[in-house]
Image (cartoon, rainbow, N blue to C red):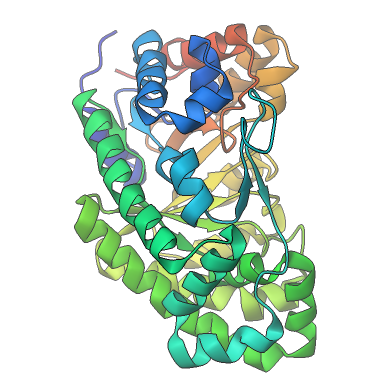
Length: 377
């Protein structure tokens, strides 16, 4: 059966909880693309054109991939090592030529740096973090950010030229709890949460305003009204309900509401296990956001609680791509796709990134499942 909707129409309908001709297919394809065409990961992560050609080849081999949840602009070597979200170790530089990149977390900003955030704001505080994390000058960070913006636009242009939708226009947002935790390191930040709770709470609200403003600017720059909002560390897997209700949920709720008021769709890319927190999402505006899960959260429980309330993106796990048989992946994909009725907003995806070491036969099975189980027209 042929598609009758464009990729953009299909994605918008899924977010709006309206029927679609077939399920949206939106895996995050990153380092796997290089392996798919026989590049080393060093070649893939240091040569933008080769990387983009590899991603294009994945699409040519699986044209049912209709929504590009892209990320490479911030992880390509020359950018990642100047302004990436943490200190990168890269293949061909710090690691073997075909190793995956790593992001190393350490206490980059200390408690003594908090006054800087209060006095100068989140942008300056984060700029200092990037200088320290990457051990580069401010000029280097700014040059990296400029290059990243150009690469982001190139990714958008290439995706649109293929007829894909963009799952999000920019990776702008982070839940403030995570934003502060990343620069402080998880262990130190959890101590702050207990020892200087009032101060932390005040700073989280400052970051929230900055993330909302940054998301608006990103939407203007990209022309795409969907933004990635990352969250991991505030999940029920890591913190109790009392702390969640003080340090995570209030800011997140305000962020989503304010973005929605501005006709921006937050894609809540929430890795780790949020199963204990699922009921809270019923308090967010209906059919105005995507909850993206990475296979740690029980997606079937999420469907049970949130069906008819929001689109859910996920969640074929890394294990199903790497150690399972193609048949086992197919079985899971069938269960996932058929659990959601047409109009219940499933956005079919890998659980976070499609793993670099995925087996080709399993990748075949992942994409084949769209035609086998996800066509409604």
